[in-house]
Length: 397
Image (cartoon, rainbow, N blue to C red; front, top):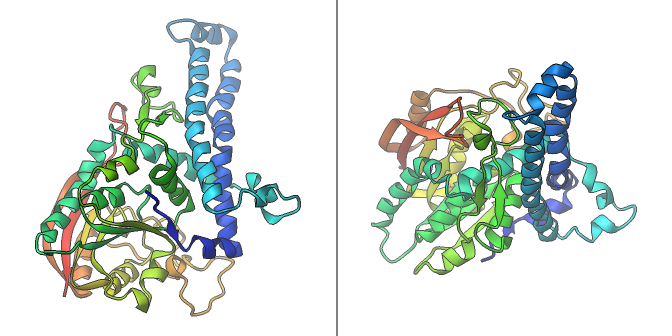
């Protein structure tokens, strides 16, 4: 199975895109060192700053705090093996391995290009494997992907003799795209994050077997653990081998991924009426201006096609200063479409989003609120945060 990204060569030729890509690769390269420093090195310093009697007490059983830090280091090393595997496949996929060894080339110092934000994205991406590619994450997947798959399978029953063509924007690590493909849908994922794209490409195309990696998803934080056993609990990823699983499916759909800004690619005239359905899972709230998202969905969706949505409304740009989105220091102020960076932002309620869907040319056919939808949630944690998601199905008029 080879799920290649459309547009990766063009992206790498663009200097700005190249900078973002190299920073993402660098963050996977630096994950281990950064995680050791932030998670255990600083804690060792703080531990040795305790009064001697206190540190002596905590170093002995049943606490054995220094042994705990050693075990956390081992867990980070295990996570780093997955991170470096992602890095290796990403470097090869973008054809930059040779460039990185050429003295004086732009790529020769890519190892140090990651910012603190890039490093956090790498850590978050690794944790997301728990949700999308572990057996333990199946509960979360059923809560969020299950309603979408069921709605699309119901619609597929009226498409006799042909596979439905489905778009999944914000595809992340590609599990929903893969699962839909296994259900017989011709599925195209779209993702703008290089962290997600590189990681999804590894797990879909290059990971050699199921349970190839041992992931410790909760190891970076020391808060709200009932026990060290829970703190150091691991999962095996991936839970399946994608190529072998897909090969055993009798009539699978096709699968592809596009690496691009959703608004710019699918708002184009060439994409008009291209899809039978669009599946938005934890996606609409990533919009600064959700009207633009809906307009683009309407453009690429054929008449009578379905928009199937599930998710909360954690508006990702809410904490930006009012009026500043799309008006950064590099903004030219021109009228050319900038996609996700277009100026302006607005945050709506769930009722208002549904009303907007109807105003913009859709009919709501089904709506359900209050669906419990955890997101990378440690079920053993003393702190439980769970979204109460909104699920609805709309048909384009």
